[in-house]
Image (cartoon, rainbow, N blue to C red):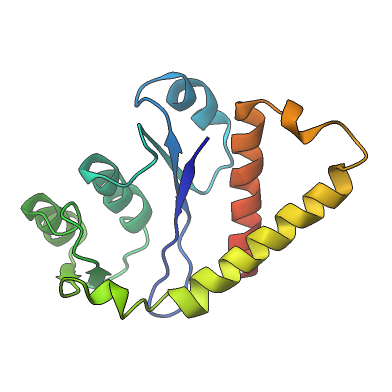
Length: 166
């Protein structure tokens, strides 16, 4: 089981809803049966490897960013080809009324603006919440007996709680 959590923050510190990317087949069982049961207020996508690709990136732009851009903004992205494609630039300009600004190639290896202030606390809270759940559940049933569906939902809820603590 694999889930990617896409965390986004505005320059003013406002945290946007999380986009979760689940490993599965687009249009398959997870997307049709499970996604509708996931917590509201966040966004969900399904990808064969739980990765961001051009399709998921377009969904991110149109769902996560679309409602949170209040005025012309600069959207800072790494140089991943889906992020900087002509289609992405067009969506950002025409649908979001903003500008797409890509960091120079290989700059993310030396400049990770969210790593210290956002990602580190998020991962710390995520780990603390998981350990707390392990302590509470240790007397109950065997955690290995949880279904993949239950594990996905637990991970999503834990990530949302950790994001709320950042």
